[in-house]
Length: 298
Image (cartoon, rainbow, N blue to C red; front, side, top):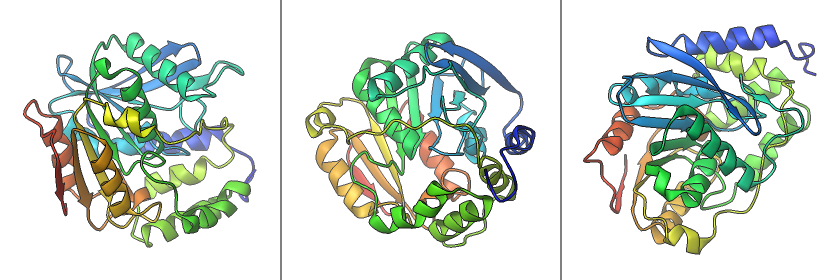
């Protein structure tokens, strides 16, 4: 329950639809049955384009948060953006059967790909969604052509203590005001899209399930990942130390390209990112995309 009363599903879905209005047309909303419930997926792009599956960050990020990148990515790819099971969005858990372990999450994503008729895909995620995407690439590398990780959390480094302390009031007793205050702090009060911000506030009180957490991927597993990886880090992230994340990723991943995106924070991605972000992603996902070692200032 928030300062504005209990969760209002109508208000949440209206806010969700306003953000989705920024997606390119035509767009199709599909529902895929998995062992863990019904997964809502927003689909756009040429029907014969190579598939690209996008996973949002945790909390109220939802698949809608890819609106600023969807037009660029869907020029060449058939984009499939999923709402996470058990998190705010339009996916529906199957009773008490929701993902509780990393193995559950990879099984969910396998079932989602099967339901979409996708044998092999490009895969990308932001924050918690990047953590899921990386685990899935380690679990089923034969199903992932290319992998991009957008300021991933808990993949190569832990969270900063200051970030956790600022997030704690919002996590313990969420209210729209606390959500806004936390986002203002993390983004440096950079103006955020009002419709996206309204969606974050409308998600307060959503009947979500406890997200799966766990240790970072094992170093030996990362060293054996023979998949091209693009790691894009938010230069102003308060979530973790971008330089430390970059150094560890470069030391562990054999086919990684690391780029620090300047003037954007962790929660400013992917919706309020610099215009060049879409070009970085589409360039990497192109057939001639870079898959080697590279580090640039953005």
